[in-house]
Image (tube, rainbow, N blue to C red; front, side, top):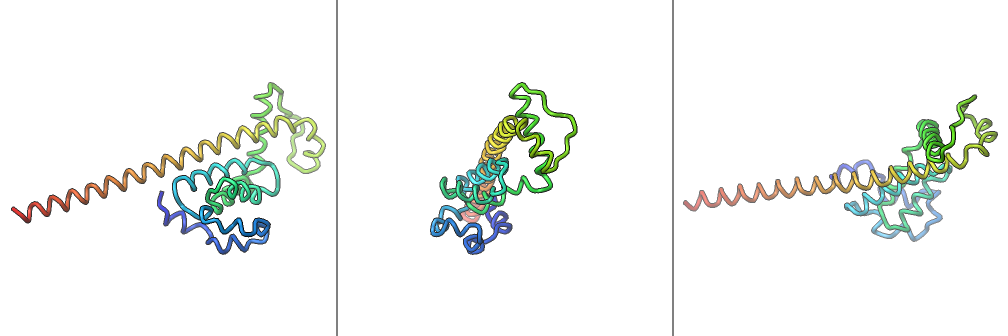
Length: 182
């Protein structure tokens, strides 16, 4: 993966260290592994961020930061990826998670009078919480595994491509050097 492209869009570590909600982690934010851009760190960060994006709590960024610190993967990427589930995408993502959870549990999903409001949710939570949380867990695991595998694959393809280019340049230089000798 092109490190320059990733670094271009990531905030610098000083900005993140000074973020008011992340101050609870104190000196843990000074671990250099949290800021590295390598295959292990970035792919792990994708897994963490995408899994936490499906946790239906308002403190997803803090959870992602805590998990990233614990497993020592790239912190900015982990925190940024929880925004996959943002106020615009949350309703369809979480409704789809509920439908998948209900299907896996063998329940019929509630179809009547569906309104995504806090009032509706508070009155229906006793009926939907189990399939909803199961669906969120399933979506989180699947997206984490796919994100991790995709980044590992893309990174590997980039390294192989770079290696082949370098090998071709060396062969061309070597051939040019042999032509000068003859």
